[in-house]
Length: 404
Image 1 (cartoon, rainbow, N blue to C red):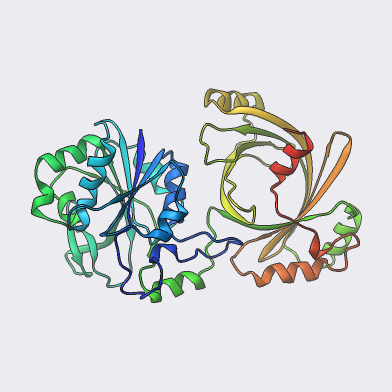
Image 2: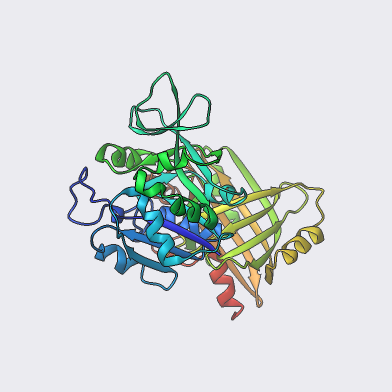
């Protein structure tokens, strides 16, 4: 069993909000997606089966109402001290020694998914992140052995601090049996008492202050997410599309075909795995993993390139070994224009003797004014309308057409 543990007892005094700080909205979504969902979704994508939220003296109603499914458990903290959430979790969940527990903070944003890497290591694993400011955090010492707890940058420490953790159930049992939580309430001091390994995980932003929240709002990092808008292009002529965009300054144009094979993975938090079998020319081959929540507008996307000399049957066999169930295949043609700040694609495929055409604008940076800019560029295209936006993903459109 793999658990997620998220402490949510903080009062958000630095923000002075009329609601729980964890419920601040994430940017770049066209639906409400609270900040805490950043760490929760990454846990779920890594394979967590149940997420435990440890509240403070009373439950945060807005947070509890948002996470009301069975895979989310809300617990009141029984004892004072930040590190004591570990014991509160353990007493309720009662994990086996071999179970895995991922620990993450609710008001943090970080790149990629460090939880996947942490799960591949045994014992206590600390996911380290870089910090360039003078914040008081648990900084790793120069020997990379111990944390200097709640310390500013000094000559004796590094610009690295723990931001996510992984324990085995046996680690937490031993921490409790050794009485460590009676000696300190600091997670960093408890980590210093036990053997542990470290994995450097890149950039991290603590959004517990207005300064950092505004920094987050003004950044344009969209790594491992996909921000795109789709339009019904049934009446768009391919030649007209190419002629119109070719007159504008662009970096590259590709006309590629691929056979796309869709699979259903075992992880219920992933919508599909797609194997794109390239055409042997410009069309690349890759495995793409995507999730789907309330919208196709902004969602997790992981793309893994596949070398040209890898046989398609080997990729499909690999997916079957991973217990991914085959769903369907489609033959798709893409007409792709790469501009500096966005990509415009016209997809064409046939299902049940009917041709489907979808036009897509995908942002290369998180500036939503670019959507209007691209729409204006397309305004002279016969058959295109700004009002023809599609909420569904291509995968859902295909499933519906195939009556699956």
